[in-house]
Image (cartoon, rainbow, N blue to C red; front, side, top):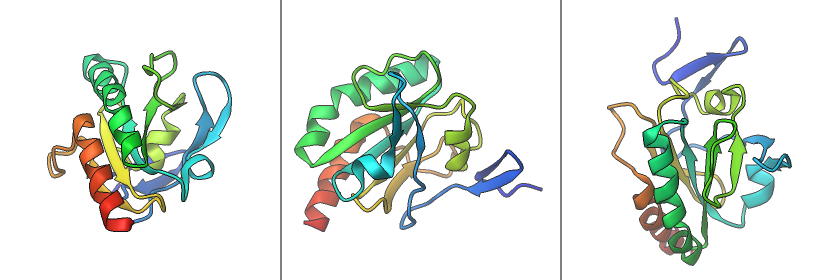
Length: 156
């Protein structure tokens, strides 16, 4: 039996990281075909909003909203990174392509079709989440800059 808030992937179950825990690194290809590691690219450099989306109306809307918030995120020494299915428009956000749902599984997401948000500090410690589970807060893309501002003020 699988624990709630986790997903079995390739015979391994990953727990969903929560507030105060270290977010797992994600490594994969960008939409441009380059290899990227979130930890290598952003650790100790940027606070992050990590946005998981599906190729549906909600996912496309979340990506547009997140892209509109990118300048506000940068003002708070932050970045918004999208985890997207193959072929999805990222609206200029840095992104990783979740070809086989392994990136979603790494974060213990119960379904790669539900949108999710994780906000971390520059050390990858999670401050807030929305994993599409009714027990999680209503963190939306437009809330990411506010969380990044809070983290920047707390951690400076």
